[in-house]
Amino acid sequence: MIYSNRIINPKLYSEIKEIINLNEKIEETMKRIYLNENENENEKDFIIERKEKQYKFPKLILIMRSELYRGMFLSVTNDKSNKVTDYSELSNKSFQIFEYWIYSNQIKDEIEITQEIINELEIGIDYFQLNQTNPNLFDLLIKNLIIKIKIKIKIKSKIQSKIQIISLLIIFRNCKLGF
Image (cartoon, helix red, strand yellow):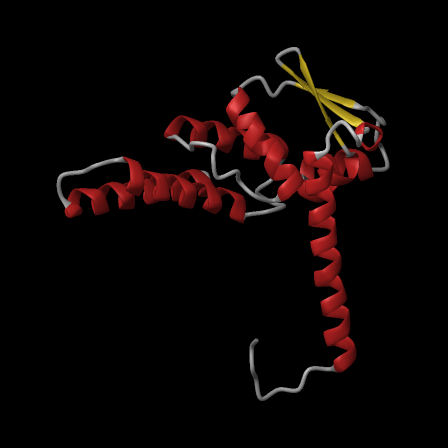
């Protein structure tokens, strides 16, 4: 709990608490939809086709997570399309990372993040226009990669290890900022 010498307006505090609780309920609902995909087929009213496979998503989740879909579904000039294709530059693994993230706002721990996956995910962040929606996604991927590098790569000296991690951070920061 955070203590302060300021008194918080009880009504404002109550409203903030309601918003936090609502956000947690939404996150739980989205995870439930993802994990019970067969039970919730009627809730999935939008199809993304890639490499001759169809992925079904609820429009509500796409609106919440992506500027691209928010603009598509909420604009006045909406064509009411129910399909989008061409995520062909993303590997299946990268697309699965995005699919899980769209539903859960998390990265699966068991997915191995490599330099190649990071490069593809940068493309995916642009495709889905996620950087406006959640700027922490790329930071989360970088953190995941650095943790795995520390665990999996055996480097002879600590100095080399620190230099490699710092150089990776610089590369990813530059990618994130669009340099």
